[in-house]
Length: 462
Image (tube, rainbow, N blue to C red; front, side):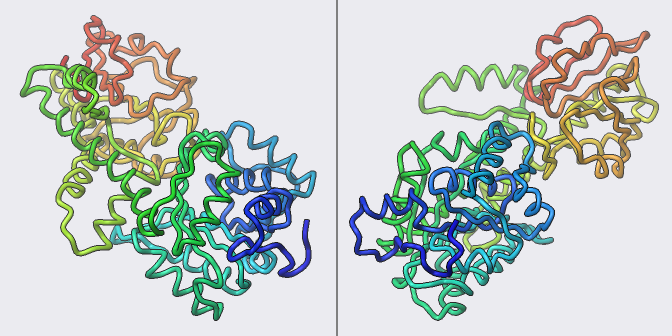
C-alpha cells in the first residue's frame, strides 16, 4: 500500500484516456480513503478495497481500528464480510486509521459514509459529515475526488459541503471534484447490495465529477449506473425513496384502522388491489423503525419552508401505530374479561426488523411503554437483540425463549424473528380463558379461529 504523500494518480481532470484511468483505479494507483467504518461504511470500504487493492478506512473508534488492522470484522450479521475483511487486511489491500486527516493526506478519492444525525428538534444534524469534510479539506489536492454516500437533505452538497471544502483547502470546484452517490444498502445484505443488487445513482457538482463517479462505480457495481443532473438531484433520489415508503406505509396503516368500520380484512383488500400494476400499497403493521424511513421525511420537513402535509400526516400515523397495536392488546384483554392491570403479556421481537440487531426507532419500545402504562406485566423476548437497557427502563422483563412463562393473557408480535417459528403460542393460553394474540405483522394468521386464541391483527378482521 502506498505510503507516499500525494503520489497517487488523480482521476478528476485527468488527460489520460478512459481506459488508462480505469486501469489506474483498479490496479491501486488511485489511493482511496473511506471515512466511517460502521454498518454501511465497512462493507463499502471492503468492496472498494476488493476492486482497487489500495484503501485506507478512517474511524474515530480506536478499538474498531485496532480490530480491523488485525483482520477482525466488528459488524455482525453481514454474510461474507468476516472472510473479506481478513483477506483484504492480509494482502495489504485495506488498513484502518483513527485520524481522518491521516487518511486524507494520501488519498485521491475520498468517500464519506458517516451518519447524518437527527437533533432534539427532529431536524437533520450534519455536524459529523461537515467535520469529515474539514478533515478531507486538510489534505485535498488538485485532481482529488470527493464522494458523499451519507444520506443528506437536498442541497447539502452545494450549500454546505462544497463551501467547507473550498474554504478549508483553498481550492475551487474544477480543481477537485464532488459527487453525491447515495448508499442503497440494507443491513444483512450489504455486500450484495453494494456490488450490484440495485442501480447506482451518481450526481456530480459538475460534469467532470459526474464522469469520474460513473467511472468509479462502474467498477464497484455490476448493475446500471444512473447519472442524474447534479448532486441535489442525487440527494433527492435517496430521500424520496424513504419518503415514498413512509407515506405508502402510512396510507396502509390508515386503511388498516378502518378494518372495523369496513368489517373486512383490509390486508386481503390490499393484496387483491396490488394485483393491478398501478397499485402497490405496502403492508400495514405495528410501526416503522430503523435509521432510515422514520427520519428521511424530516430531511425535507425540517429543512425547507414549503409545507409538507402529506409527509407530516404519514409520519404522525406511523408514529401512532405502536400505540394502536398496544391498544389492540388492551381492548382484547377487556373483551376477554381480563383487567389489564392484573394481566401478563409477552412481546415478541424488539429489533426494528427481523434478523438485524438494531433498535433505533423500533416500534417495540413505545408499545412496551404503553402496555406498562396500562398496568400490564410485560415480558419481552428477542434472540437477535442485544440492546436491553431501554426496554428494562420502560418496565419490561427481558427473557430468553427458555424463560418464557407457562401462560400469558396476551402475546403481541412486533418483529417476526425466525426463532419464533417453533414457538407454540396456543400452549401459552391461560387455563380459564383465551390467549389474546395481537399480530403486528400478519405473521400469525394461522391462529385465526383457534379455540384457545382471541386473534387481533393490524388491518385483519377477526
